[in-house]
Image 1 (cartoon, rainbow, N blue to C red):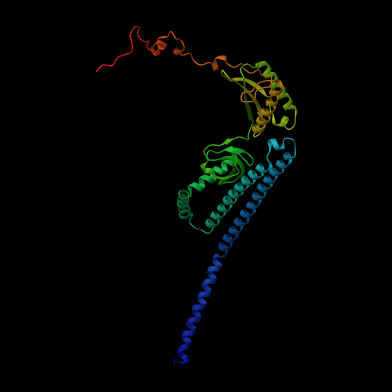
Image 2: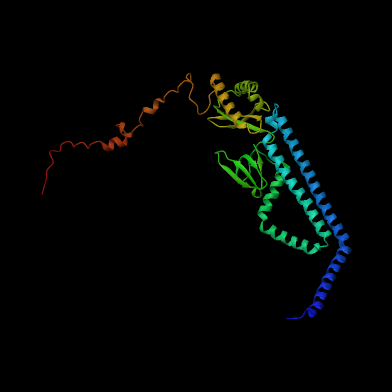
Length: 356
């Protein structure tokens, strides 16, 4: 066992090392505390400014979206509300646009703040940015369909190509729009089925609910009818239709007789057209056919395909239809009759003899 005299130098050496380490640490902290404090305060300032700016921008966007929704609700209660503005369409469109803007604003603000914090910590950003660029390219190639759907949805919403309540023909499917998303658009078909269409798959869109529509009715009548009389009857039907509710709102123009579309030996086709509210052309066509048929029946105008009128004279039967075709055998002097007559016996000849 070592003696106490031997342990005293070792203890003194350990104490001196600890004192030197503490002295060096204190000196290091004393020399660098100002730098650390400056860096910490800079990082704190960057984080506070980024959080405050993000909150202000998001609140401003939310207030803008709320104002858009309130304006849509205000117009909805007016007479033109259902005609010009669809509140649900405006709400979904504004919310989608607001979500995209908030996400973009948050990404830009927080991303810039993160880069500034790394720069304050004296970290070289060149390798990080290069790696992020390579990763972004790889993700872009791997999820190009998703990116295409997202970008297509953003532009469709921003350009207001269609919205909730519109009837569209998207090529791959057609129907009424029930939901517009950044990646998928939901359509309800004519039979009630729901179509989920990716926005990136939509190459062309036919919106049947914007602007105005055309109601066209073709009436086939007999060629013996008077065109002037037909025009007068149709005009009376059009005047009565334009004065009654709700057809007075669905009709955006007068009902016009365009003229003859087709003239045949047994019929002629009269075209009737009217400009209507978008999406209401089919109901106007059905009502117009109903009223034109009733008016033609009352006016005695014959429609092809309908039942004949009671005062219509039946055509006389052809008297030669029941007479058989003449036969050559009915004339006894004809060669056919002479050929079929029996041969008369010769005069003076007795009974025939049979010889061996």
